[in-house]
Every structure is written in C-alpha cells, then in structure tokens.
Image (tube, rainbow, N blue to C red; front, side, top):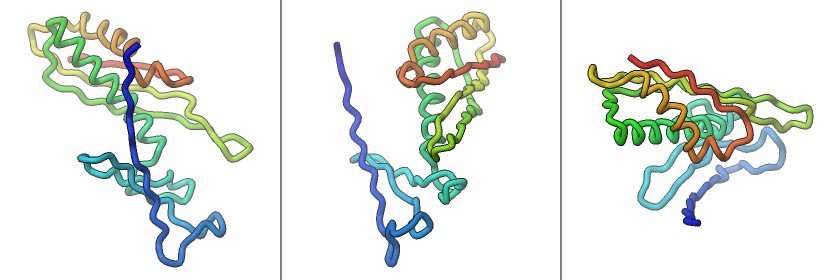
Length: 153
C-alpha cells in the first residue's frame, strides 16, 4: 500500500510574563507551519479564550473536509466531461462539549454551490458529489457524519 507523510510544525511562543500557571494566564495563539509555505495563524475558539482573528482547530477540520471534497469533485468532473466554472462551499460543523470539559465534532455539512458550463450535465455533476464524498481522504478518516447538500446551476 502506498503511503504519504504530512509533517507540520506547531509553535506556541510564550509571551513575556506569560506561562501556564493557570487557565487564564496564557495566550492560545500559535502558528501552524511547513517549510516553504506561509504560516497559518491559529488559536483556540473564542469560547475557550482564543483569538477570533485566528483559525481554530475546529474550523481547520471543517475546512479540510470542504477542501478535500472540492478537490475530488473537480477531479471527477474533469475526467467525466463536466465543466465547472465556479465552486463555493459554505461548510458548517457542529461541536458538542462534554461534561468532562472535552468535546467532539458531531457533524459537518458541506454546501457546495457549483456553476457549470451550459453544455455540462447537472445530473452527472450531482452524482459526482456522492463519488467525491466516497473518495475523500478526510471524510473517510472521521468518525462523524459528513452531509453533502449540493446546488448546481
């Protein structure tokens, strides 16, 4: 079986006078990096004392599902003669907090809005969304439902 490795560096810089002495004493700001790529400014969700101007892990998980689905869909359209002129997904995820302080993403819904060239087959495009979901590496890796609600125009 062929494998692929993904190496990422996550860095949390302790700011002057800050440490993890208590829950309120430290910033949640950090960066996600890989050589040769721009850094992603990250933090925790604002509900957990994070910075709302930075991406949080939950948003990045939803983004990963959306991006993976889109890339598979575009690939499948390209090899099946469906010409996509535009693609936009307003994806949403739902997390539930648990009494022990932890939590879990319990579902993600993708809302891809696809614009096709006039000669393209909308029915085929809709079917390719199902195939893209089946093949998506990220969707296959999560233990919660991922719903796809496409609109084709």
